[in-house]
Length: 182
Image 1 (spheres, rainbow, N blue to C red):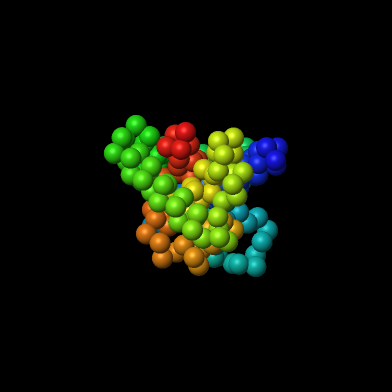
Image 2 (cartoon, rainbow, N blue to C red; image 1 turned 90 degrees about the vertical axis):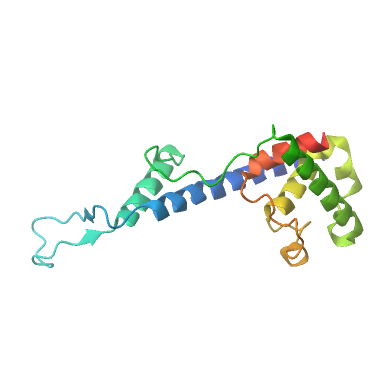
């Protein structure tokens, strides 16, 4: 059971990393300014099909192509240090005692709701201390607003805690939940 749980956690982390990478790509592309410089497409001198027209590519498309090429070459999305736009995904401030107290209260409230709903109830084996990673993952999905079998969107969307901590990175939210449940 522990091996399966660890495999599931690794699988979830890989999935979250992919989503965060795509978010970074889309954020950087959306911040590219099309009014700036426009890149010109590469056409050979012998290509007379277009006559005197010089096709152009928008800066956003150029940025997107550059980021995708970088992702497949290096395996990471590098953030642009000159980009004045602050990062939207931020780490959960675990040192903030007030916010940690609110998170602890919210975790207790979600756990109580989960225990009353039979179809979404966490198995008793998961409630034990050695399966705290899976428990934290389930709770983080609810608090981050991610659809899951234990927390279907149709049943949780109207709940006030659904997606409450969406502005924080998923990994840092899991760590904070581990601290509060620890």
